Length: 391
Image (cartoon, rainbow, N blue to C red; front, top):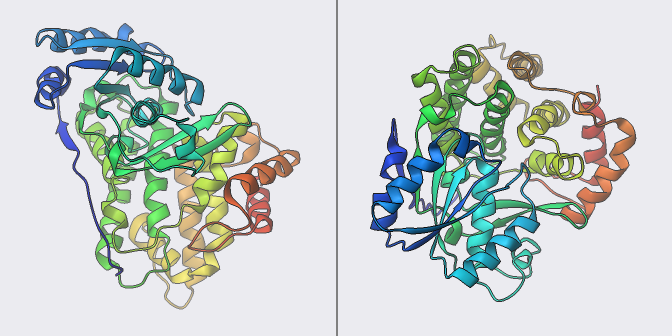
C-alpha cells in the first residue's frame, strides 16, 4: 500500500425529505446570497425548486438562479455564472441536479474567485487556490461529483473536454434523498450505474500490490450496485435499492476506494473524446469503452481480472485457467450492461470506425503521447481499443 492523504470534509445529509433542510444547512455555513444552479428545468416541474426556495426564504437567504446546464457541461454557461457571481456578490452556489450541474457549479465557484479565465484551471495554466462554497441537492446518482474535488467541463471552441481538480471545490454539503431519483428515465438511471461502476474500475485496475482492504471494499460496492441496479430497473420506486445506488455513487468517487494505490483513468480518457465530439452520454460511452479496454489489457494482470471475475461476477474459479476465468468476467460485465439497456459497441452510439482518426487526434491534444497507469497507452494502443469497441 502506498502512502496517502485522505481529505473528505463534505457533510452528507441522506434520506427522505432531506432537501427541506437546505435552508438550515446554508445558514449554518453563513450563506447570505446564493446562486441556485440547475439543468433543464425539471426541478421546477417536479416542485423541488419551490421547496428549496421556500426553505431558503423562510430564513431570509437571498437567491438568484441560473438554469440551462446540459450533459457534458459547457464553458459558455460557466462564464455566465461567473459574471453573475461577481456582479451580484454571490457567496454560495447551490447545485440542484446531477454531475453535470455540480461540475458546472464547481467551475463557476472557482472562476468567481479568480481574476483570469477560469479555463486556465482546465488548461493547467493555473491551480485553484480558492472558490466560493458549494452545496448540492443530488437528483441523479452517477458522477459522484457531490463528494469529489473534480470538475469536468467541455470547451465549446475545439470541443475539448477536460478536468480540473482542487480540494477547494469539494462541496461543503450534499443532500441525498433517494426519492428524488424515482422519476429518472431508465436510460439515465442505467448510465449513472455504469458511471459509478467505472469510477471503481479506474481504481481497482492498479499495479499497486497489497491493497486487499480497498480491493474488498471495491468488490463489495460493485456487487451492491449490480444487485440494486437489477431491482431499480424493474422497480423504479424501490427506496432501498435507490438508496444503495445513491450512496454507492458517492462512495465510488469520494476517494475512499483509491487510497494507497495508483489509479488508472485511461478508460475515462478514451471516453471523454466520445462525449466531447459526439455528445454521447458519459455513462453510455463508458459502457462501450470499458469492455473493450478490459479485453485489450487483460494480460497486463490476468490475476487481477481473474479476481474481479470471481469476486464480483460470480464466475467459477479455475486457478489453472486464469485467462479463461478473467475473460468470462469481462463477458459477464458486458452482459450486465446489455441487461440494463446500455450500449456496448460504438455503432450503438452512432460512432463508427471512420471516426477513430478524429478521436485519436483529439485524444493526443488532450493527453499527449502516453496516458494511463494500469497499462501505459500509446495512441496506437488507443486506436486498437477503439477498434475493439466497434465489434
